[in-house]
Amino acid sequence: MSRLIDTIREAMLAFDQEKLVEVTKKSLKEGSDPLEIINAITAVLREMGDKYEKGEIFIPHLVIVGEATKYVISKVLEPLLKDKMERKTIGRVVIGTVAGDIHDIGKSLVALMLFTAGFEVIDLGKDVPVEEFVNAVKKHDPDIVGMSALITTTRPMQREVIEALKKHNLRHKVMVMVGGAPVSAKWAEDIGADGYAENAIEAVNVAKKLVGAKN
Ligand code: HCB
Image 1 (cartoon, helix red, strand yellow):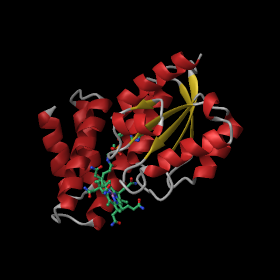
Image 2 (tube, rainbow, N blue to C red):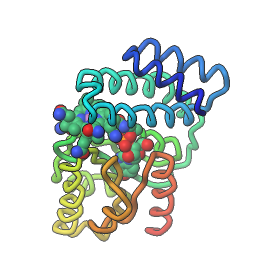
Image 3 (cartoon, rainbow, N blue to C red):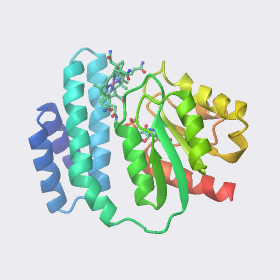
Image 4 (cartoon, rainbow, N blue to C red):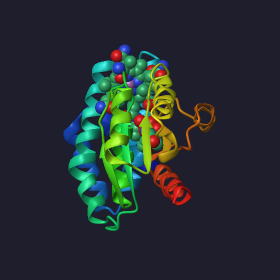
């Protein structure tokens, strides 16, 4: 795994999408699991966040690696994961990144992993207003609402969505799962969410538990 992270890190720090695609394909050929590669990319993205915070890299760098990551996930890894997908639908999830927040890599990974595990997923995208979550619950009657927030200032929107669900008398009908870099189990408990997941694999486990608890 550490060799895989080193190779991925090198490609990402070169801010070179083609190189990232090349090393991803090479790692797959050498037997790496797509999930291992996703974990390595996630770890390096977090390192890059720290570099950004320290002023060692800047927004255009984050934009480039963000786009490169999305490309690799959607064009190289997603088709492989979908091939392995379980077909039976085990629940319905509405998911989105909260209002004011345009970070969507983690949310999309969670959506992909849930889909792969057999959930029907309605992805509302990023920067999703509170009312849109509420309307989606009315329209799709999901088992779970998943919310992602990556910035400390957008995290409170997760609470706002929960409060809006209560106001519209929908909260008892749906489980709420939250995640994102500044989100923790403690935060989830504080705002009255039903589940918290630190990563996409954990999100599948939590979602399965929540659906089990609901039915
Ligand atoms: Co962005 N950014 N960024 N950024 N960004 C962060 C998040 C900081 C932490 C970087 C830092 O300062 N250390 C920081 C937030 C600091 C804070 O909270 N106070 C930050 C900032 C400040 C900003 C801007 C405000 C910068 C600016 O413009 N001045 C701006 C935000 C604008 C806005 O949203 N309104 C901004 C912009 C960007 C982009 C566009 C350049 C790019 C995003 C591209 C995209 O998503 N399409 C970007 C990126 C790439 C990052 C970092 C480097 C990586 C984020 C990422 O994709 N991680 C990030 C650093 C970091 O996170 N530490 C940095 C990888 C994914 C896989 O992890 O945590 O998102 P994840 O998701 C996991 C996990 O949390 C969980 O599962 C996922 C998969 O494993 N999960 C859930 C997530 N959602 C879930 C929902 C569930 O229901 C369950 C589980």
